[in-house]
Amino acid sequence: MTSVSRRSDAFLIIAFSLIPLALHFPYRVNIFLSWEGAYRLYLGEVPYRDFGVPMGVGYWLLPAVFFKLFGPSMLSLIKAQVVLNIIAGLSFRSLLRRLDVPFGVRVASVLVLCLSYILVNFWPWYNNTDILYGIVGINLLLGALAPAAGALAAGAAPPASAPAPHPDASGRRFLYLLGAAFFLFLSFFTKQDGGFLMFAIAAALVVHDGLATRRWNNALLFFGLYVLIALVVILPFTRYTFGYWFNHGQPPHTARLSPRDMIQEFLEASQWIKFYLLLVLLIVLAKGRRLGWKAFWSNRREVSFLLVTVGILGAAAVFQVTSYTPPDNNIFFHAFAIAYVLDGVTFLTAWAPDSPGRLAWLLAGVLLWWSGSYWKYIDRISSRIFPGPAMATVSPTGENVINEHTYMINLDTTHYEDESTWEQVPDMPAFKRIYMPPSTVAGIQRLRKMPEFTGGPIPVGDGMMGANPMGATTTGAATTAGAKAVPDAASPTDKGINGGGMMPHGGSANPSASDPWAPGPGMAPMTRTLPAGVRPHVLNMSELTPLARELNFTEDKGPMEPLWYHLGVCMFNREADTVCARIARGGYDLVLFEYVPGLNNFYPFRVRDSLKVHYVLVDSFLAPRRPTNGVVEVYRKK
Image 1 (cartoon, rainbow, N blue to C red):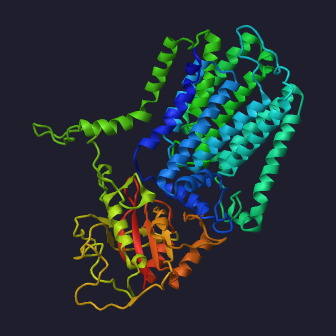
Image 2 (cartoon, helix red, strand yellow; image 1 turned 135 degrees about the vertical axis):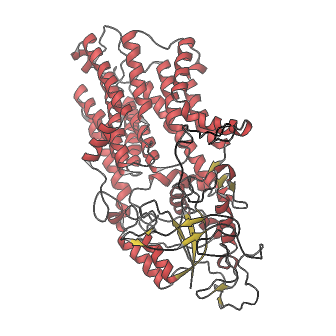
Image 3 (cartoon, rainbow, N blue to C red; image 1 turned 30 degrees about the horizontal axis):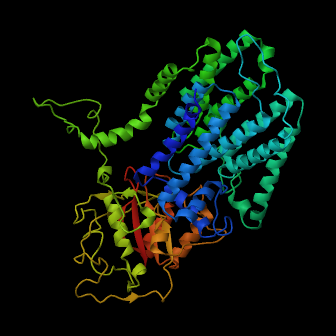
């Protein structure tokens, strides 16, 4: 094949990685965390001194660099992920080349990686970033170990060790080992579980290298470099609160490593992982019988490929329990497993996708297999061009219609805003090309006009200044804009159940559309103003973290301040009680609290209880979630 066609797998990786740059995106659940960590580093804040996190900071390094290069915006996060996907994808390609995987198998495996993992991971997320860094590290490690002495030929056993090294191979080997140790530690310092699992695969590879070659210099150098890098990175943070925040199972953290959960998840589900393990076992048995077990186990290429594949499958089985969100964040294993399976098939059957025709059929099969990854994007476009008929619940003859769309009755009374109606926030660069529910956009627009941000007089006391921007009532009736009410009758707390009323959202009953916070007619409220040059102090317990940039408010900062507020993850009882105490003494000018009743203290319910006592609820609007089952409440100091 030509050099261009030989690089077609690289072109696939780059092309799939670049697709997100041409799209507009809905605001994604949890993307607030990608922004917040990168933005804090962009501002020059130091982890564990200015904010606490239960893991390392590798997750935010590249996004922070892109904030510096392109400015802090959601689009910069996508650009950072594009680069990370390209680096990791090319590393996967290089890893297969180091294992001497045939070209056709390599292209098919790369396409699986693109469809199953790269295409769906266009936002930075720590449960993805740690795996991508780990792939880079394992690829560099294989570059140092050089296990491939050529693929197995039918009936022949290749030599057990690699060819004699080039005169400058020792220098290259050191650089490979240094790079491998760096990226594998970076994987661990992004997320402990994924990073440890990738390190375990690397450890198995270097130990096997020592046993196979009877030379342990690679293993000793790799482990030594890993420890050295860890000390250089971690020791400076120990002067702050690293020991408290970094989760290694110590109180107040809780370990997620449950053998029972792993066994149950593996045996009850994990069909693809178990299926691949069965295929791997059959291939190993067939190779062992054909070549002889001694020849098979003495072949470094074969054993290294087997260790990587089984290691990745094992990591995926553990990762789905320790990092359970999103549900499919462990599907990185498909590309590795299919590479091993197809490589085994080509050896055992002498069939190889080495001609354009065979390769085309193989790639067509992969595209059909993973059609779900791209069909949803095609369907989104085609449904707008060729909209389907409305789903009928009654037939033309008056009969009740039962099918997969109508057999259940939706009793959820929560207000939802269909994604087809979502829109962008105007004049806010941080949210460029990101669309959100109309209620969220309208709420942000009202928020930016509040006197805390415009410098106007701020109402003091229990009442609001003028008419209610949320609507005419807070007793559960629909707002004047026609929005449904979000139920709050069973507001859970982290210690029990706390009743409430009904919370309307969206719309405005204020007669002054230009300034919804203007005093109503005949009112003479007590007011206060912020001193000149003083920015409002805001507690932003919502997923709209870019508002700190757009509205220019200050937030809590210090060694005991959590970066985000999920109780039991990055916030614990001590921090929650501290926030409640600040609220009790009026320590915040404004508080944004996102109430998501279906999530266990995603933002601590006790904080909301405290706000109801000591602050005044002045507005609420839908949170930018899919589905829109959360509400952002705006509280002002009395």
